[in-house]
Length: 116
Image (cartoon, rainbow, N blue to C red; front, side, top):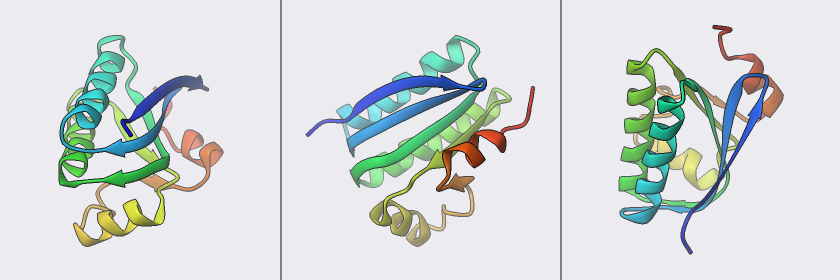
């Protein structure tokens, strides 16, 4: 099963609803392209909703870190929403849980973005 991405806007924040697997190859490339596309359009407040992501491999983790760094370097913010237990545990193991701003509540996550 490949990854699917749908995009929506809420209060000036772009939410990417991801579902499926973020893995080496197609999944990580889709995520990279989606984030770069948003930055190219000047959308720098990005929330990745991972509630429907059932698997992420080391390449997928790398892509999350890369997306975070790319957005941050362009003066934006990237945050994570609705981590599954699997993804949460993986970020804990890799000591990345503290790097990302993670939320379980969409409204709270949207409100946490700085108003630019």
